[in-house]
Image (cartoon, rainbow, N blue to C red):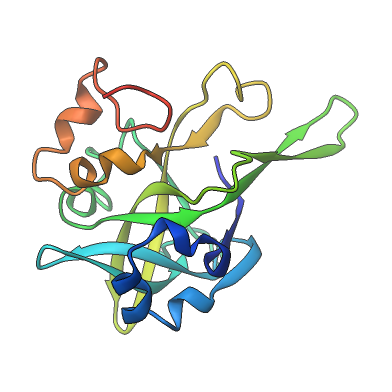
Length: 191
């Protein structure tokens, strides 16, 4: 799962082309070290073959959710099956830039311990989906079963798209990467 993440775009400018920074000056002022569901954060979408930054609110709101609840994570295992997400995954994929994310492990005594994960100064990208509701753009992160390294903290982790796989993430045949266990878009794995 992912319940909090951080993003400091002013210190991450070296991850982007100068032209991208010039065209998104306001976005590159964004800095928040504790982004929580319902907070605003920049996402990257593809429009007319260009990667575009948009400010977006984290979490989907649906009538069928309990009042005040948002859907801020979606399981990759069922994203193609659920009526609310099957169209989004084919047409509205996005990247969510981040520097770190946080998970909490519940101890036997009930205390929660906060872990800072993906502790890299380099900018990384979650894979997600977005939707437009009126004038509001919202997004949700895609999650997978945790690997052996982080599984002791939480049973699920967000998918992280390696920089070298961004074009694949936005390609029309991206779905094959979900269904083929030999191929991965994930960070630190060959593809």
